[in-house]
Amino acid sequence: MCGIIGVVQKRGDVAPFLHQALKRLEYRGYDSVGITTVANGHLYMKKERGRIDEVHRKLNLDDLPGSIGIGHTRWATHGMPSMLNSHPHFDCKDQIAVVHNGVIDNFLELRSKLSARGHTFSSDTDTEVIPHMIEEFMNEGQDLKTAMKNVALQIEGTYAVVAMTTREPDKMCAMRDGNPLVIGEEEGVHYISSDIPAFLPKTNKMILLLDGEIATLSADGVEIEKISDATKVLREAIKVSWTADQAERGGFPHFMLKEIHEQPDAVKNTLRIRREVIAEAAEIIRNADRVYMIAMGTSGHAAVAGQHMFGSLAGILPVPELASDFSDTVYDRLSSRDCVIAITQSGETTDTIAAAKYAKRLGAKVVAITNVVGSSITQNADYSLITQAGPEIGVAATKTFLVQLTVLAQIALALAETTQFIDDYVVSQKRAGLLRLPEIVSETIARNEERARTLAAAYYDRPSFLFLGRGVSVATAKEGALKLKEIAYNHAEGYSAGESKHGPIALVQDGYPVVFVVPRDGTRSRMIGNIMEMKARGASILSVAERGDEEICGLSTQYFEIQTGVEPEFSTIPFVVPLQLFSYYVALKKGYDPDKPRNLAKSVTVL
Ligand code: G6P
Image (cartoon, rainbow, N blue to C red):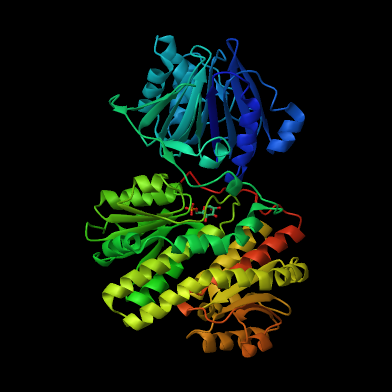
C-alpha cells in the first residue's frame, strides 16, 4: 500500500533518487505518485495519477531542485485515484508538505472544524487535514516537531506521516502509529521510508522508528523521542543482511519469476536457523493450553499447512484463523495460558498486527513468524522467528510462503521431540526429509517450468478453475488457486476434495479444468475417487503428483511431477511450486504484469 520515502542531504538534488526509490516501492501497490522538494524558500511538487514511468514521461520527476524531499506512492482509500488526491498534500500557504500511509478515522470532523476556521481543501483525502493542522500549530509559534506531536494527539486511526516545511528547510519530521517507517543512515544523508529496499542501494544501516515516536532527520543526524512525554530515545542503527542486488530483478523478466527461482536458497537459508532459536518458540507453544495461528492471504495458507504439520508430527492441534476475524471468533476467551502464532511475511499487515495486539492485551503469548527484522509484528510479539527469504518484491507471495512452511516444519519437529507423539527415529527421518527439500524444490522448478508454460498456453482462457487437495494439500490447493486469481484474474477456488461434492462439482462440465494436488500420502486413494468423479463429468484433470505415480498421471489430462522422497507433512513446499509457475505463465500469456496485479498491495496496511 502507500509507499513513503524522504531524504535529507547536505547538497545535490534529491529528486532523481526519490524517483528511483519510489520505483523500488512500486511493489507495495499504488495508483498515483508524487514528489515534493524544498529549495529557495519554496516547495516544488510534481504529482499525478498513474504508473511512475508514465508520470515521469509526462512530468519528468527528476527535475525538481533541492537537497531535501519526500516522495509517495498512493493506494487509494479516501478519494479516487486522481492528481488532486495524490500525495504530497500542502497547507493553505504551500509551506508545509505531508505524505501519509494509513487512515485518519476522524478526518471528517477535523476537516469541518478546519474549514470553519477558513482552511481550503483541494482533495477528498483524509491526509489533507494533517498539513492544515500543522499550519495552525506553527502559526501559534510552534516548530514542526511540536506541531506534529500536537497533531498526533488529535488524530485517530493509524498513520506513518512525514512532513517538511519551507520554514525549517534543513530537516523533516516523521511519526508513526500503526504503519511502518524505517530510517536509513549514511554519512551526511538520512532516509526515511516505509520499507528498507527504498534506500538499500545507498545503505544497509537502519534505525527503527516505533509506534508513538517522532523522528527529526537532518543531514547530520537523527533525533527520536516519544510523542507522549518527549522522552529521548537512543537507538543504535542495525545492519540488515539484505543486499541491493537481492532487491533487483537480476536478469529475470519479473520479480515473481526471480523469487520462484530463489526458493531453493530461501528454504536452505531458513533451515540454517539455529535449533535453540526454534526450540525456544516451540517451548512457548508447548506450554500453552490453546494455540492459534493468525494470518492473512498466503500466510493464512501457511497456517493451514502448519496445523497439519503440528497435528501429525507433534499431536498439537493449533486453530488457524484469519487475523481479520480473530477477535470476532475468540470472544475474548484468551488468557496468559494461550499462545497465538502470528504469521506475516511483511510483518506489517494491519489485521495481523491488530489481532496480535488484541491477543497480548488479553495476556496470551505471541510468537511471530516474519521475513522482516524489526517489522511492526516483532514489536508486538513475545518471541520472533525471522525467515530467511531476503526481500520479496513481487506482490504475489512465493518464496516467503515456502520459508514460512519451512519454519513451521522446524517448529513441528522441535515439538515432536518433546511431546514424543512420534518416535525419535521418525523425527530424525523427517528432519532428513526437510534437509532434502532445497534440492527437491530446485529439481521441481527445472522439471516443471517448461510444462507450466505449455499448460498455461493451453488453459489460459478458461474462465474458472477448481484446485483440490486433502489433508495438508488443502493448503496447497488454496494457495494454487489464490496465485491464479491474484495475478492472472481467472476465477479459481481452492477446496478440500472431500467438500467438492457439496457445491463446486456443480460447476464441472466438459473440459472444465480441475487441478488435483496428490502427494503420495494417506489421502491418495480417496483423491483417486475424487478424480474419477470429476472425470465422469468431463473435467480436464491437471494434477501435481509424485514422479512415477503412473496411476495418477494415467488418470490426468496433464500433470506436473515432483521428485520422490518428499515427507508427506512437508509436501506443500515442493507441490505448490508448479502451481506458482503455472499462474505466472498464465498471467504472462494474458499480457498482465505478474509483479503488479490490479487492486492488490504487497502489504495491506489498512483494516
Ligand atoms: C497481501 C499480499 C499477499 C500476502 C498478504 C498477507 O494480500 O498481496 O501476498 O499474502 O497480504 O501479507 P503478510 O505480509 O501478512 O504475509
